[in-house]
Image (tube, rainbow, N blue to C red; front, side, top):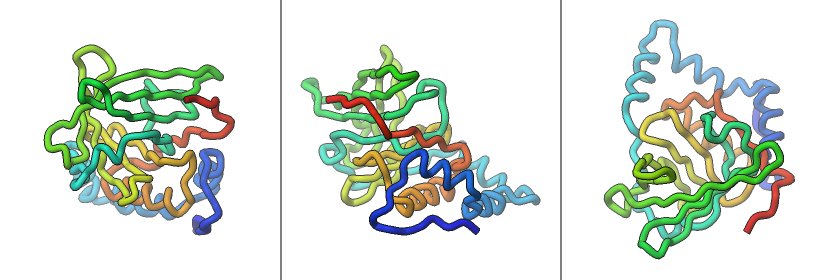
Length: 205
């Protein structure tokens, strides 16, 4: 079995991790086989998970969450197809909402989109409603957050969307393994994760 090498000096870029993953990381594949067992019992559990939302984190501080986050991994979807150097900036807006600036590079060109977010309800729960296009809102659910607010796992209302975010462009390999394990045990298909490169990125404000 291939094991991630644990070292405080070793960080994982997208290229590094794709090399590791393709080399045969059977740790997670074995767990996936256990989840999708031949008798179908575990498969039914996954189907139930897909219909239910994962609880958002509690004791959440939106103020501490503001600032820049780098996208470490994501489940594929059309509006980020081919994007690298993806980052998200959150700041207090004059209207009391949260200003969002998502940016990235596609085909060598810089792209960005602005939006707004608001707490869905209780401000101490990591659950926001985000808006980029007209009156339409989407659910932004922070389902894992370390105490230092340096690593986050974000999902939508179900399991179609998933992002790993960090305050730095790279994670240590054991930190990434921990997030993958969390996603797997919560019903996400981690074999589908993409790892957008964060190397040679355009400098942005």
